Amino acid sequence: MVKSAFFRAGHAFLLLLFGGFGLGACSNGGDAAAPIPSLSTEERLAAPADPARGQVLFSECAVCHEAQKGARHRLGPTLWGVYGQPAAQLADFRYSGALRRSGVVWTDEALDTYLKSPQSLVPGWRMSYPGMENPADRRDLIAFLATLDE
Image (tube, rainbow, N blue to C red):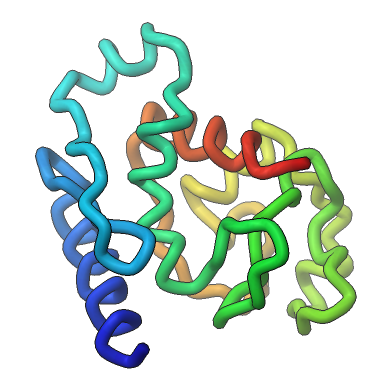
């Protein structure tokens, strides 16, 4: 378990460091995932959102979050079913006061703002995440999060 968590943390660091360019990210405890296509940001934005690519990008989030129905919380809450819902609604997770009071609803726009610059959406938020600069990456990750529902 520790080795697996360490492996995922290291992978997420590499993805953050190199932006996922041409790396085949690993998820689900080390199963190989499809490589991220090397298209320009403009080409990816012109194409429809790609939830499968978003799932690969989710490996950055998987260091702290789970994405499966019924999964236990990790350092952060499980993200199953959060798309379209008000923030800080899971009774069994201890959210920051800033997020509980924010009134944020996890829409495409709110998720895009958060993923780009978390502190700009909710100042004083506890979560330390540097943000995801590439708009096509954010769009694909949001498309994946939208699939996590019943």
